[in-house]
Amino acid sequence: MQVNPSQTKKGSTLVIVMIMVIAFSLMITALLQLGALGEQETVKQLRISQAHWLAEAGLERVLSWVAASKDFREGLSGSPQTFGPYTELAPGKYSVEVWESNISNITIRSTGSTEVGTLDDSATVQLSFRYASGIPGAIIGLNNPGHTHLDKDVLIIDGDVYRDGTLDIEGDIVSNQSAYATSPPITGDGSFTENYIPDPDSPIIDADGRFAGLINSASTQTNTIFEGALSGTIYVNGDLTLTEGISGAGTLVVYGDLIFNGNDQSVSDDVEIVVDGNISFSQHTSLGDNVEVFSQNGNICLQHDIDGGAVALIAKNGSLGHIDPEYDNTLGTIDKDHILTAGHSIGDQNPSKPSFEGVFYAEYDIIFRHKADIYGSVIAGRHMEIGHCASPGSISITYDPSVFDEEWQLDFGNNIVIINSNWKRLL
Image 1 (tube, rainbow, N blue to C red):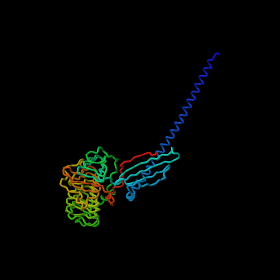
Image 2: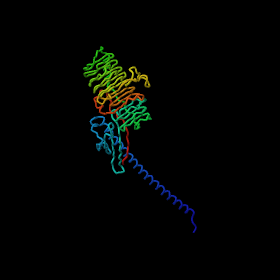
Image 3: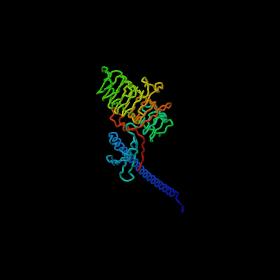
Image 4: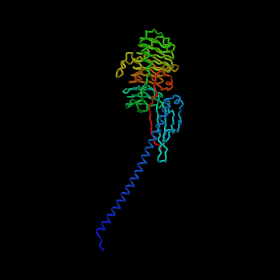
């Protein structure tokens, strides 16, 4: 039988068409499957994102509690306390666990879960977050660029060391605390755990301008002879030298310089001292439990021993420490010629007497060259040098959070410094 060529051609064409139809069918099926998988992945990522933000909501809730209530912080223990679950945010819920990981840090574990529809439509994300509130640590350096140097005779106990700038440690940090710097590396051969953290907000010192208003009032007063007995507010328009200490309660405002020049004199517990210029402790002085010493535009010069209870020494626009009264705090570097070599101690080394408990704050430099026994925080806006390798002074600085429970006139705010955070997807 003879085959018609045209029929053979038609048969081949039919086979090709059938193959193409099958191929297109397979492609369309594959595309539909890919589309379904893509939709599932989109929903999956959406659920993960929702769980992420639910966990963030739990974190923000706890941080608001901490910032608003000291009672909440004081009620924490070393074991996790669970709050929630909370369902006011749709879709899903979140719960939080909070505990005090050590003397100065709080840990939050927040878990967000969508739990919507089938298991494939659900996601659970957990955030572990550790931070310090208020003033973290024992040593703080602010206002990058700056440098902090801790010499070999410096011991930091139960406190972190933070520097917004460079940090050189030759002393020791104990109790598993950490050193932080935003301009690495941390140098030196002291013992510490090396970390880096984001920049915290600077402490707010006298945000309401109250001290500046007092100084302006003092500048308009007729000069007052003040012999040490304080009642209410006393204004002195000029310099003042005290040889008998200060008794009573109230505020002493000096529009000039103030010199403590009476050996072994004391300042009563409830005294506030506001000075426009320099403040010098040229003889041993004991400060009462609630004393605040504030220099608006000068330096605080520690030329002899000081000790006290819960107090604050603040050089708002100056430097602080064993420095000469003529020290130029506008210098870009610390002038070694202006560091005293004959100073004495901060805080009495005799255990039967009180050590210095409180806050040292200076907008520029802090220089401690000799003995110091300090409980609280040391905060320098620019440079900080603590210790004297040529003549070791056994300097110890211990972070004591109870110091900051006082009703300070100054306001350090509720700054939150992240120590570390870790996201984990659980489902």
